[in-house]
Length: 455
Ligand code: C2E
Ligand code: MG
Ligand code: MG
Image 1: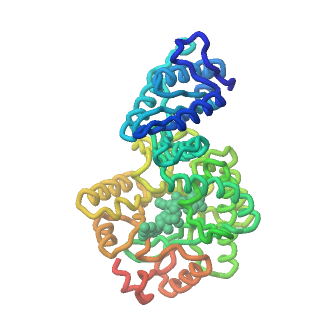
Image 2 (image 1 turned 90 degrees about the vertical axis):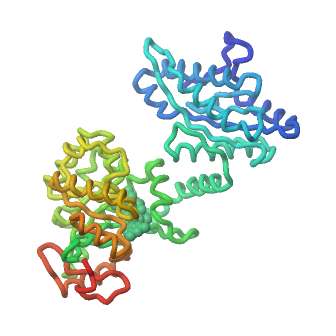
Image 3 (image 1 turned 120 degrees about the horizontal axis):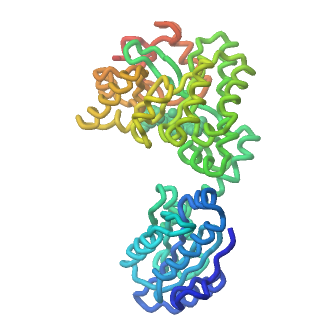
């Protein structure tokens, strides 16, 4: 992408400057701010701009960047200045008041949203915006730009096409994520990742039907890091690919170890992120790993979110057919909260729906009636429906009343290290009750006895 420069032919007030001119202007504005005046710095990033370059070509992309720069300069007018920082990123500053900062942000986003005519077409764009002000970040121009960049990161995390104001917590989170991204390589080679296993149980018999493998990171300085803190960063940086491959390999290695120890092995589910699933060799890698460890594919399940599948339905369908053809089962995870399309659900081959825990934990008829409807839908499509995040006996009864098939949650067991899960399986073997599943598991805190289950 060539850098757009100030448009010498544009109206005088609506010019945009280079980064150096911008920084000089920002320092002057901060230094000269009058009492009660705030200088707000806005970092802007066009959402999914690469699609313009891919579909219309780089020349058209450059023209779009010039138009956006022009509009931003026009929008800010004499209240501040704006610069193209490279790629699809812009920085703006505006002399305003704390009360008016959000209005400026809305105005800037609205300016970007207007259709842009280019090569005989109309391009519609949205942007994400991060804001830092002298009131919260102080009067150092570099600090203001860094804080606005951290807030921009938050805006992107928040789903794009929005703005966020800087907070110290946002900056810390941003720095943490950058630092974490640097640590992934070391974590993989030093064996800092490990898996915990959480049982899934049959709602009537209480038998353990399978386990879900959940990733954990034993970080040398930070201690135990939960997946919620690093999976997003791993996805954005691409590290999810080697990490996700490691998870599949580790699960297969673990199953082989259980088999060799003569334990009653159950199917293990692995969470697969969109980026990992979209790889051309995803199915091949799963097949090769299963065969390398001599594992029956029926002992593996993959969990995908609705959004992953909806992103490219045809390709997802082909891959899922190949996996199921091999004998691997497929579950849709966190069902009901992603970008879902019921027609898609009908077209893709899956075995189970995992009902998102927000439905299970909803305390009220409204929430539970939605839950009941989803369970019926799953049954009509011949799917096994699993209630996730089950924490109380009451939730188990409600799920049972709605004819849910299986349940998973702290009520039965938290995710536990492999040796503990092995012990749980071995103990449940004593009360073994049904083909392909281990015996009943007692709720946490109660004696290990089938009757205590209350399911
Ligand atoms: P998920 O796949 O929906 O996994 C279930 C999460 O709910 C787990 O959180 C589990 O510990 C938690 N959970 C289970 N029962 C209960 C309960 O009764 N109450 C509550 N409040 N929570 C419960 P965890 O282990 O922190 O994982 C969070 C998410 O991180 C997972 O959600 C999954 O999306 C992702 N994740 C975990 N491991 C992997 C992995 O190996 N690869 C990928 N791509 N994502 C993973
Ligand atoms: Mg899951
Ligand atoms: Mg889930």
